[in-house]
Amino acid sequence: MNAANKRWVPFAFLSPYLLLYLAFGLFPIVFSFYVSLTSWDGIGGKTFVGWDNYKFLFNPDSHFFQSVGNTLLFVALTLPVQIVLGLVIATLLYSRWVKWRGLFQLIHFLPYIVTPVAVGLMFNLLFDWQTGVVNKVLLKLGLVDEGIYWLGEPLYARMVIVLMLIWKGFGYTMVFYLAGLANVPKDLHEAAQVDGASGLRSFFSITLPLLKPVTVFIVITGIIGGFQLLEEPMLLLTGSGMGSSVAVIGGPDRCCLTTVWNMYDTAYGSTTRYGLGAAIAYGLCVIIAAFSFVGARFYRGDSE
Amino acid sequence: MSPALKKTLATLTMALLSVFSLLPFYMMTIMGTYRNEELFANIVLVPGSYLLENLKTVAASRFDLVYLNSLIVSLSSTALSVFVSASAGFAFAKHEFRHKNKIFSFVLLTMMIPGQLGLVAYVIEMRYLHLSGTLVPLILPWVANAFGVYWMTQFIRSSVPTEVLESAKIDGCSDIGLFFRMVIPFIYPAITTLSLLVFLWSWNNYLLPLIIINKPELYTIPLGITSLGDAYRTDLAAQILGLTLGTLPVLVLFAVGSKSFIRGLTAGSVKG
Image (cartoon, rainbow over all chains, first blue to last red):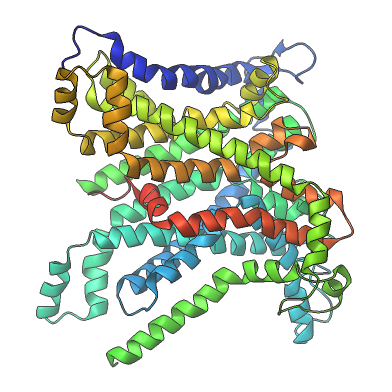
């Protein structure tokens, strides 16, 4: 556009975003890095400690790698199920064999948009040792003699979290596969049909390969999103006074402590170690960056 | 298999899966309509008769104030974010300036940074600026929204014709006038989608209010529903009803705008 005489105009339109981002986005990120090099409880003075906080991340007492491991475990157990379930449902919905397509799409996507805090509390209620419906049904059917302590045993607590995350997330993958399926050219399937390929065959040799970019995208965003997991396990296991749940940081034996939960607890929960909290955030960012880098490699190598 | 049988089987499968998706919501809603003691005694599957009493208990805890706070935060975040993003998008899409591509790449890069990275210092910054006793800290992060800028830039580039802008300029339209009278009317669909996304993100946000907000008068919905347990620890049924009420607005909003919402979410992931 003819704006050579008024060079400030584009910057005037850009400045609200740039100034706000510099002040409330970039500045805290840079300042957090400085905080991560200090020992500080937010009230007293800061003591510069260099890389000590980062070294402490390797100490088991920081629970950093334990929490990263827990988070990765949850991603590894839920993402594949979400992908398969999402893909199957999207394919069924797209096939036009299903009536009320819009309604089913809406229903399956609801769990994804509901406030994560509410999701955690809902499952806290369902799996409560005393009042939970799950135990009541099991007792009534005579499958158990006394209620199972779902949220008090590490293995069971992890199982409930995995179930909860699958319930919450498969609608998200479904939506992306539906969008991907809409981009698969119809004539390819028609040609395959003319050549005598069965529906299943053409799904595996035509649809699935063409959906690969969508799958790679879901895996990358699923890992990045999974690393930011906090509310669902936190409210599931602490329940904030709902029912008769146990209030332990990270659940029994910290088996469900996620990385962001660990950061919250270090800086604002059990301790107020701001420096260490900031170091955990940077450690998390490095791990996410590594996964994104590998993922982006995959993505690019794919489209070539 | 005959087509009719296929159709029935597929629809039946979907219906069964829908039960899996809806069951937790259903249980939650039903449990809120019973007397507290009944919840401990038996399995409840059909609506009870105690809804009004539970509603009274919830109303007594000033849940309306929590709603109001959430509305203030989400509506302000949405309005400001849409305006700031559209303005920056206009600059990127329809203007030429030095280092434009570099600045745009930088915006895209910031989209990848997890929100928790600057959290510790952001909280200190808000305290230093004496904003921690207000709702402002919950609004600011959404206003400088890299996704919004990216979204608006793409949309303005593809759907606002440059010729229209140029002829309006020849007719003497000012730059501000161009933005409000020429660009905005072309991008209503993009505004709807971005509004829904920002509203939902800010409505569901938990970590930031949990750290910053320390006065019950400023609680937003996620904090409000977690603190229901403190307000009446003994009345589980009322707590559950509060939970239902807290999730309701998002469900309604999504039922109304689901198409727009999904379009925004899947944008960029699928080429085309």
